[in-house]
Image 1: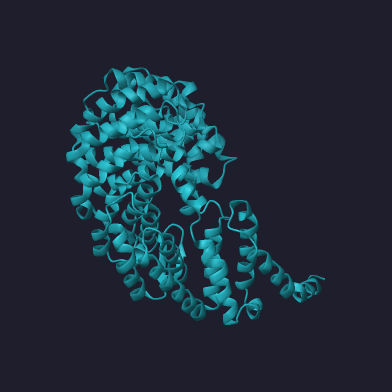
Image 2: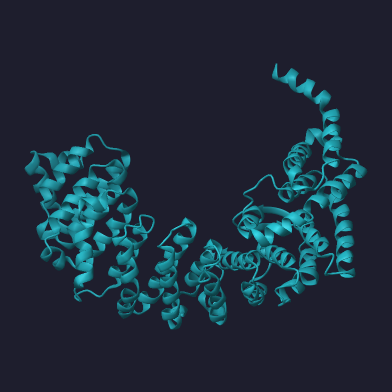
Amino acid sequence: MQIKMKNHSCLFLPEFTRLVWVLLMGTTTLSKHDNLATKCINFLSSLIKKLMHKHLFQEEATLRQIIGSIVIPNLTLREVDQELFEDDPTEFIAIDIEGNESGSRRNCSQQLLRAMCNQFDQATCTICFEHIIRMLEEFQNNPDQNWTAKDAAINVMIGIISKFETTTKGVSQVKDLPRLLDFFSKHILPELRDNNHIVRPMLKSTSIKFVCFFRNQFSKEQLIELIPFLILHLSSPFVAVHTYAAVAIEKIFSMKIEKKPKFLSTDIRPFLEALFTPLFEIIKNQKLNENEYVMKCVMRSLSVADEDIIPATQAVIEQLTMTLGWVAKNPRNPHFNHYLFESLASLVQSVCRKQPEAVSSFETFLFPPFQLILQQDVSEFTPYVFQVFAQLLEFRQKGTGLGDAYSSLLIACVTPAAWERKGNIPALTRLLRAYLQQAPVEVLKLDCFMKIMGVWQKLISSKSNERSAFELLTSIICSIPENVPHREIFRIILTRLGKSTDRFKRLTSTFFAVFIGKFGAQMFFDELNALQAGLGLTLVV
């Protein structure tokens, strides 16, 4: 039945395709017709992709009409696109960078162009290059008036020159690298070098996107030469432009060669001051929405800079804590908040690993906003706060004591209420482990040990928290071995072992290995045999 239906539908396909074609050709560029236009374009793309329908589109005249009457007009920026660029840049970026709106004309036209290249590569490229040359000449004749022609030419080039690409890694292979690099040097680089931010900002954003898209085709040396131009556009007053620049820098810094970072701290050292100054200027401008792309660029730059950021530590931590202070009043963008705390953690890691004495300076800056977040119970931030506290404790020199602030925090962390939120559990577990490793004596003095054991007992009773339970237990037996109720711990674990998952069994085996390494095999067997004669040998065998 399905085969018959398929055969019958194929009979009507040419006529149906003609009707869709006619409908699309009569559709205006008005935004109210966007949905109809994209549906028609997607329909044509779905047909062209399939070899069985190749005969419907293989004539050169047909290909020319598709490119000239459908692809180019729908890739060309409209007045409504320009208004969106200026009035609602967040939405423009979501459509253009992220592809959130699969129904946008430009995205659908790009997909149609790629489908054509898959089936009719040589003919499609020949026709497209003719249009590219014409549009670039049109731009040269009057750059101020005809800049949208160059923008369309760049987008056509992106569509036809790419061979393999992914959303996260960009284009991995191109059809003609010399032609791509020649196009870049003649038509993209001049836009990047132009420091007049007011002139053709949309064309600048497209040029930056071109660099980001084809970053894998440039050598490391070429990318290093491009970084100052990208930094230049971080100062653009147009949100979309400085966001595109931040995205490009972040993705370049994220590149890897054989799973190792392509860019090291020595590579970006000359740019650090020039890079962070405009990034923080954008972030501290509260008139702009919290820009997650810019904050992600800060995070990535701090990670790559590593120890080279030490001379600027105070300036960076001041900016980050100031930002934390105002976003904590009204957390709106979870991605922005995540990258903010990742930036803090990266800074702490880079500086304190090299200079452990710097912990006290970080505590001075971070304790006031962190304590305020905990007092106000800002649930979106508390897991991050606990993790950074744990990180600071891990770098804190042993024997220096806890002080009043850390002591008060420990007492609060072992209360049952602190463990009610699932999101807090991994971070709180790490924090308690840091307390046990760095200040076991203070844990006992504050009468918190049995409360920690109570926390462990609560964690071990939950399947979702069993990993955290064993991590905490390992720190307990290694840090305060003389106070551990071994037999009771074994009893609780073995009670769950009978109805456990494979993961629980692996975690139990690992814990037993740690226990034997700490206390010896004899104590292991003695404790088990005290629960039941011969139990130790039964478990081992």
